[in-house]
Image (tube, one colour):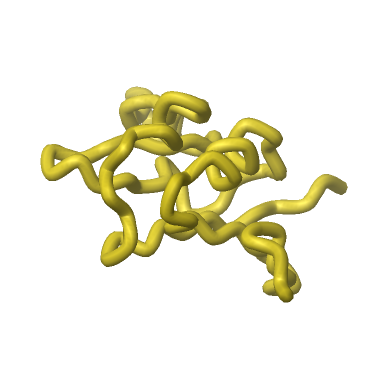
Length: 95
């Protein structure tokens, strides 16, 4: 089974560059008639709010190279990714 990642953005550090949303865009959350989340609700990615602060579309996602690339490209390293089950840090690497 593939790892699930927990994705967090430190909004006190985020400068709203939009790099994460450009590299790993998240969909607009929607629900089907039965209330079941759509793919855009459960997949990885980022969106910017009206104050240009980044938010992960979902707090957890399957391991996703685009989400990792977005974290690596953040100019202020505001994005932290950990393995959901173990808490092991994926990005930024532990020193």
